[in-house]
Length: 492
Ligand code: FMN
Image (cartoon, rainbow, N blue to C red):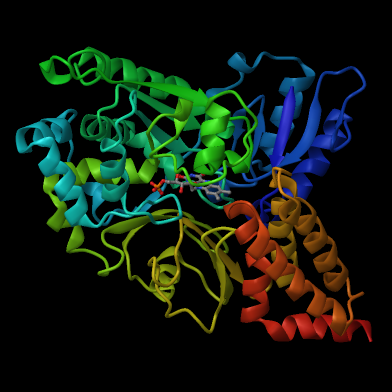
């Protein structure tokens, strides 16, 4: 049995150390080790995508949410008795999908094939024009214009072309793609199929993060049902010549494989190292052929835009950030879960809705995003202000800012793919330097060195991981400079 306990900051806040200690004691195994008889190993891992129901873990890749003492005892007993995983009580693996606010997309009625039928009736060029009109921007983080990506891909002469759904969702604190794949898979697959029709692709791939192995069988069943309904395979909706199918490939637990070009490398069976760009994936992607890589939520939104038209979507949100955004809310609040908001919603409003009091700060966009203090709660979720792929972690006044920043920096140092020196060495140096200051051993020059190091890592790394790895320090330093200075004084 391979036990992995999530070590994301929200799991730490919910007591993951007690979980580790209890499992280690009951199973007579060291954290980070394998028991002498080889029966069980126990380790920490990065966020498992269950921050709304932590402390969480995985056993042989299957989810163990809400590890309360009684459940820990039950897990230990099942392992000691060597009960096969298939015979464990199903409720042990039950992942909930709490949706607290469904503003637009989540509450749209939908019947299978509807988006495809509408797209064909309207015309594929016209459907692309509707996606353009919607101003839909990618929901995976970078916010690239979806219509532009699809159009560029469709204009390439090389064939075949590919559609990839990025379901890696590795950013700590993000779990909205898990919910979409669990409850709205047909709508995600239909968005991929509409994209395939527009760009002329016959092969789609879903890159599913290893931690979501529990969703694979369900997704395979949905795909099979779609084939039987004539929504996948040869002659979709009876149209000769439109042949498109989707396969599911599993990731192996690397955050870097969420980066589109590293994901393509991984899909090709190589180590997940981001490619040098240009050329971009739309020109030279999977198997060096034109490829669209989009986030799960982007395809989900595209399905409804294909049905309702672009203006319907563009009327919501802000001019630069149209439509709605799914947020995964976790941390110090009474109602952690999924919330769908129009872009432009203030952090204050969101905190009120999720039941957060006495807030010290919020990490918007995960470790690679922005930490904002409680003096900035009127800032808004939007590409032009607080850009986010969906992670929204709340911290109350009892939390230690350094513990938060350190957890994030540790994450990047661990997840750096090691390809480029600024990121490989820089994230390790950032981790050490921050630890020195947090432990009260830092002097003023250490703080200067820390800031300088942040700039080096940010400006010289090969890909987005390194470019954003210093954000936890840069943004906490900006929000609470006094805490850093106090920490130096603590030494004197
Ligand atoms: N995009 C995702 O959709 N899911 C991810 O898990 C993800 N992880 C990423 C990790 C790193 C280190 C970086 C640099 C980027 C990541 N991205 C992720 C962004 C992708 O590279 C890419 O921009 C995105 O999949 C494009 O889809 P979109 O236009 O629909 O957002």
